[in-house]
Length: 192
Image (cartoon, rainbow, N blue to C red; front, top):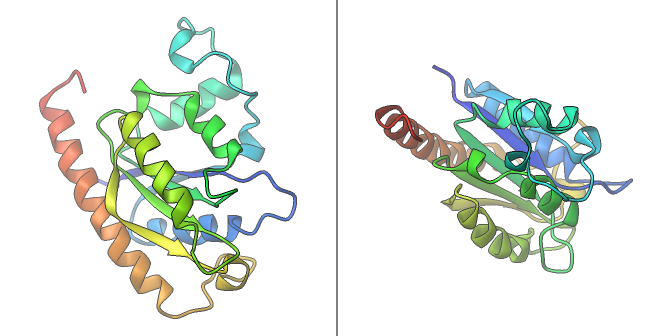
């Protein structure tokens, strides 16, 4: 069975470049047989966090929050595509993720980080790792950093460097290992 993979993208800037990285990783996951949903905060349009999804009674969550929950709840794995804003996680990404908590438990995450400079967003990744662990979706050991994102992909998310796809395949292979292992454990314990 295909893994249900949710990709969270975290920028709402007008001239955002990281969406290309998100499109690339979505296509790479699809080509590997994943059932993929790309979550873009510009499309989901959640307000600043006031109440988490779990704080609403059945049928009481706002429609856009419920639609997102319907994507998150059956997921096997999460890919977080994060830029680096002031050496940290973009506020739109943090807000998007913070609307949920228990719904992430016992599922792995993987971090694709990017920046306009040479470091590829790794400083944001450091903050993101502890955040994801606290949310119950610890990240796999490997990351996929993308320096100079504005030149790394064309508009459709096709990589300009032929080494990008093999790096992504190794990264996704690791995520798949963790996703299958945790899925098998969740199936043994219906509480998970």
